[in-house]
Image 1: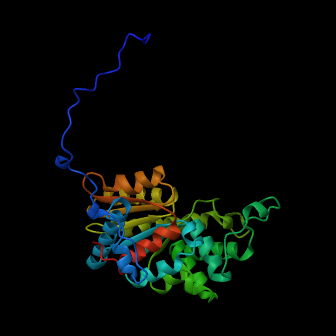
Image 2 (image 1 turned 30 degrees about the horizontal axis):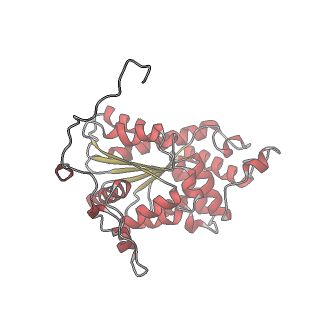
Image 3 (image 1 turned 90 degrees about the vertical axis):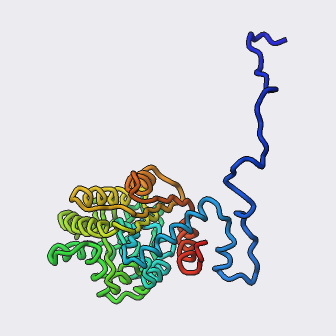
Length: 319
């Protein structure tokens, strides 16, 4: 006999219903089909389950294609990890297919893309070099970044465009896989958004904070113009930037609306291996609130998810 005054509840009168009568979210028609050795990439994509992230990927692909067909922007906001995981060739191909109409990157994108273009490698061993004070001290990287910032101010252009011009003019050995060079050659806007002190070039002898700030501010204004054109079907895809680009995008959205421009029927998406507060709030939810559009959040490593999105755009039927 229990010492408690309260008896366990009697479940004998619980009401039940027939399973067949219940609406359900998942049916066997939604299940995956095992791939075959002879499958094409399109057939493989078609065999993925019609559930959750796969359906989000398909719907996002449909919306990117709709934006392309309507002549609306497809803007990619990226972090440096996208470059470091070897994905630039895929983005360059998507540029040529009309699925990338602008790129906005944080400062680390400039550093890593420049080093890839010039040397064919990037991403130093920070643990090994920090103790000696050598971390980030590669001369060429700092000189190119700071020269581009100074020339951007004198020519009244943004830092991203100036970086593309600066790196391209050097005819780098690996320019074919450089986002900066590819965008510059194709007249695709590339805006750069630096946080002073966050990138290695900012502590080099040639650094000029005023030039870095002014040229990056010019790019913010250009980015606002790009976002304004999203109205009526444009897309913004945030890939691998957890803080800088989500904040930049949210401010651009408010600038556009503050100046009286309509910004509805837009699509936003965040891809990252951890869904953080800022991208979810500032990219996926707030800009599309109150019927202004739809946002997507897809979780996974960039080296998987970006090729999958590209494959869906190029080979998938989006069914």
